[in-house]
Length: 227
Figure 1 (cartoon, one colour):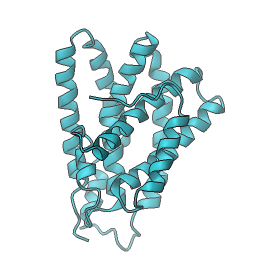
Figure 2 (figure 1 turned 90 degrees about the horizontal axis):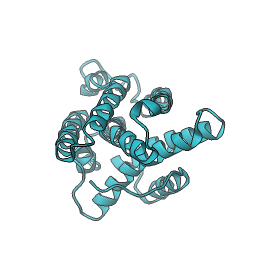
Figure 3 (figure 1 turned 60 degrees about the horizontal axis):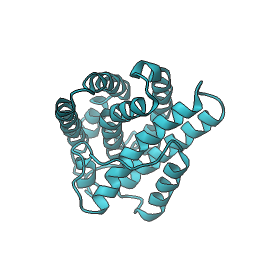
């Protein structure tokens, strides 16, 4: 799978996402996720600059590689190249009138954490010459930033209480996915892929299965509500 080369700086990542925000229609599902992810990335950069990470270079390298996988998917879709299975539902349903903004945001977060985050951890480990355990503290801090912003994301994109009824499918979709569980699964996947680094064919098979499984969850999150 192709990955955008972004080095270790978050500056070009933020610039790319800001450019996407200006170019995409606000109701485009990819634009919805991009706004969420831009806010997360800017918050991460602020925390890194403020000394919130013990080794800023390591944290920024992980975050930049993480974002690069999302931007690679955007580039692939724009060039009509195959998009990873984990991202495919979001790009397929990005303009569906029956899918709500919160669903687009959650589907993007699901793809990015469930698939891209473990790959970013392994890539950073290879570059830095360290095992995943050496990045666990940074991984947890990045995850804490995402969790802290999840509540704000839901508040910004959640329909009003008069619209979100018990029988509304969105009610059940919101309860079927957890960022904490997705983050824990991503860490397990990263450790597994690191263990398989000497067996590239098997690692590719596991990565493909991971992408397909995350994509299936994303497709469920994007179930049209018909409203």
